[in-house]
Image (cartoon, rainbow, N blue to C red; front, side, top):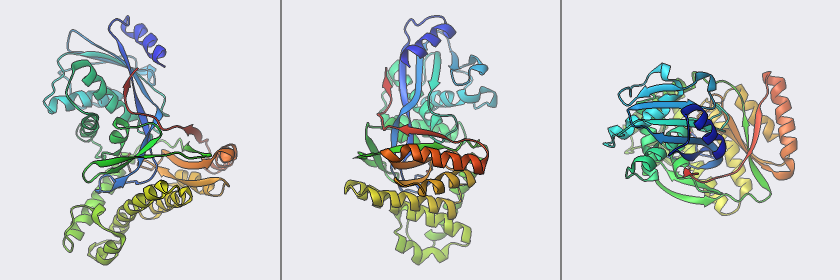
Length: 387
Ligand code: GLA
C-alpha cells in the first residue's frame, strides 16, 4: 500500500521529494453502543484495515487533496484561508476540519500541504472511515509541524472537528479507538472520564467477521443527533429526582426505580437502552477476562435486541444480518455495530463455521433485501503510524 500511495502521489503532485507515508486504522465496536455520549462504557478495537496517506508541506498556503477512493473528484483545492465547512469541499471537509480544529486549539498550521489518501475500509460501512481520516490528518500535522499533542489529544481534536466543523454530534469512541488502538486488544473506555484499559481479545478458534449491509446511509446522521437529544431530555427529567450527571451513572435497578420521572414512553426506552447497554458492556468485558466467550456472545446478542427494540436504530437490513447469523451453528454472538441505520454487523464466529456463515447469511440477505451484503474477516491492529 505504501508504494501504491507514493506512486499515485508522484502522478498527481509531480514527484515524491520530501513525501512521507502514513496509516490510521478503522475501528469496530464489540459492545457498548450509543453509550459514549451518555457517560457510559464502550469496548471498541482498531482494525488492520484503514486509511493510507501520503503528505508533503507546501511553500504557499494552498491545500491540495486527492482521494484514490473518489478519483472522479480529482484534485480538490483549497487554502488555509478557506477553513469553513462547504458542501462543495466534499470529503475534504474532514481533513480541513482537523486543520481548523488545530487552529482553534492554538496550533495554527503554518503552511499548506498536498495530501493523498487511499482507504481500504468499505465505504459508508460504519467502520469509521471518517474518524480514520480525522485521526490520520491530526497524526500527519503532528509529525509535519511538531505540535505537542498526545494520541488522546488527536482523538479529542478529531471529535471536536466532527462536532463543530462537520455538524455530527458524535461521541469520543471512534476517534479514541483509532488513535489509541493496540494490536490484538480492545479498549475498555469509560467515556465519563476517559479512563481506559486494554483487554486482550484472543479468540481461540474463532474470528471477528464483519457483515456490511451495503445500505446507503443518508438520514442517519440526523437520526443520530435525534437519539442524542432524546437521551439528554430523559437525563434532564431523571435529574429532577436523582442526583446524576449522566445516564451511565445508573445501575439497572436505580433506573427502574426512577424511570417514572421520564415523561414519554419513547424516552424511557431510549434511556433504558443507554443504562442497560452500559451495564452489559461492563459485564461483557468481565466475561472476556474470565475467558467466558459464550457469555460475551450472549451479551452481544442482547445488545442487538436492545438497539432494535428500545433504541430503534437497526432497520430490516441489520436485523436480517443479525437474526440470520443467530441461526448459524458456530456463531458465538452477533450484533449491529456503530451508529446503526445501515452500516455493519459484527459477529464472533468459530473458524470452521465461517464459510457456512457467509453462505447462509449472504443468501438469506440477498433474498430478503434484494442486494448483496459483503463479508470481511478482520484482525485487530494498532493505532496510527508512519510507514
Ligand atoms: C457513531 C459515533 C460514536 C458512537 C456510535 C454509537 O459511530 O461516531 O461516537 O456514538 O455511533 O455507539
